[in-house]
Amino acid sequence: MIEDAKAKDAMARIHAAFAGRDDVVGIEFKQLVDKADPAWGVAEAQLETYRGELTQRGQLDLTFGDVLFTMKKPGTVSAPFRTKWGWDIVLLDTIWPEETTPKSKILTDIFPELQRQHFVTWVRSLAAAAGTTVTIHDDVLARTSHLGVTPWAK
Image (cartoon, rainbow, N blue to C red; front, side, top):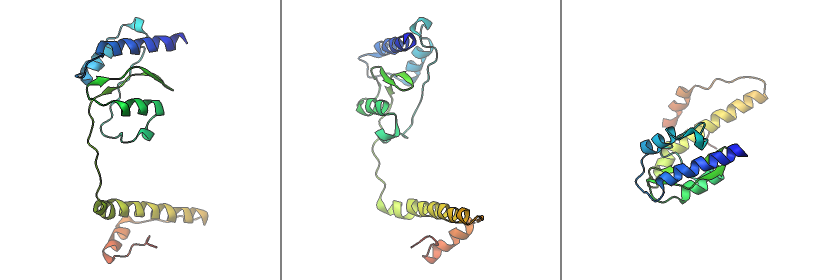
């Protein structure tokens, strides 16, 4: 547990360098981590960047998600916290506004693609169960859409 204690202390020191600030930028954060005194116990620091991909807490480790989604102001650094991978701190860079996809876009763009993917998966599972293979030609499937009937419709 000595290594764990060193890692916790290193995260606390990095956090202390930015405590009370709300103007921290990624490069400044990374530079401090990169030049951390080896005595701090930072053997390997990873700076991970997420750009808009994180939309729900459930997409992350529970502890990480709880910390990230309770942060309110870009440019702030979280207090150190423990995950199953080790000790972490988070620099919140940007909060992206929530986006809502209109129903019309879902029906015209997203749902047909999901139907196509499900149809392909279904056909391949039937073929596998029958001990054969099936070749599905996307261009042929695409040509059926103008008929208003899709091969995967109920």
